[in-house]
Image (cartoon, rainbow, N blue to C red):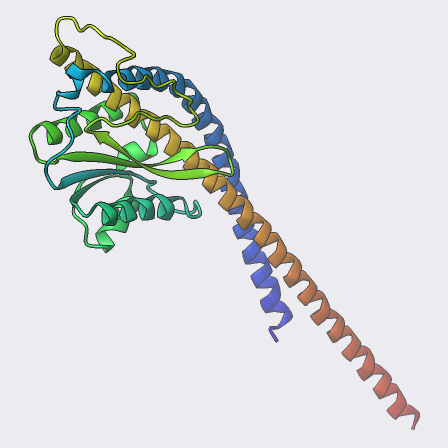
Length: 291
């Protein structure tokens, strides 16, 4: 059994860790509040753009465009949004694992574009091709970052380097619920947004006129849609990351408190046993003197 000194040292160490973890918990709470505010401000914009894209999907002229035609090749790019740091529970492993299972199911020749170190490291260990990694975006995602990434994806797609583009991110539903998703960005599939109940148009129910022509409109509309989708996914993932980190730090704080309580009880038992032994020795010595 450890000595009283060893117990005190360990308890002091756990207490220090508890203070650090508690501070990280408070930081995560603050960041979560800011992330939720940005997310709530982003969703209305994306939902409106998504509604328009759903209408375009059912237009006969738009269906013939490169951005909407079904792929004929076997090359896919996967954009994976994770964090740069750990200590956020299973947040990174959940979305990375979901992306990996999707890759295995499609069986295509894939290239990974990682937004965040953790996703890059996950697929490097599995010998996947990492085409690019954006570490700065994972920390602070701005609309310009999404725009930059959108241009790269469109360049890959229009040049024929890839036939499909997928996005793996984490959708924020609540502080306790974060759902990993994999959606197809290109060719444009069914638009979706977190918690959005989009009234999608039925085929033939939304006659549209393009001015000056369908190609010109789509050349502007699709990049805007991709940028909005990417930016929205970054905000969803960022919010999920901070919520996961907050929950993880909260659980760590509770565990540290339990360990400190256990060590305190152990120390008190050890101390009481020492006092009892001293009393027994004193009484024993007194009895010997009486004899």
